[in-house]
Image 1 (spheres, one colour):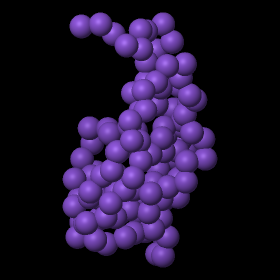
Image 2 (tube, rainbow, N blue to C red):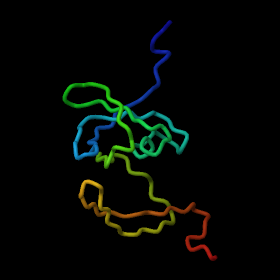
Image 3 (cartoon, rainbow, N blue to C red):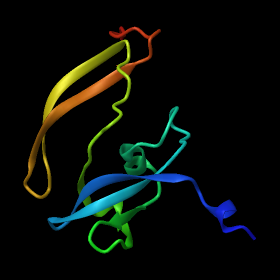
Length: 123
């Protein structure tokens, strides 16, 4: 049997994982070339939000494949080379996040609306 026929097409995304209690691991996560959630390739946040309790990570130092429990991941940092397209309507709120390891991250929360939706729905 052809072994390539059994492979799931993936690509690797360089990332750093902070694992509880404060360990940083450098390497790559595996991303599917297609996803059910949206058009195009799977994104790192898709992997974190999937139901599976573990993700596969290839370490930079020893080229091992490791399974990390998502509940133990404090944060993931990666270079977003292809940011998602900006929708027509969105609300942006500034925020600060205090992580369990004591790190403070500043950023924003974006609420996206479909192009045909009312950005300010009435209640």
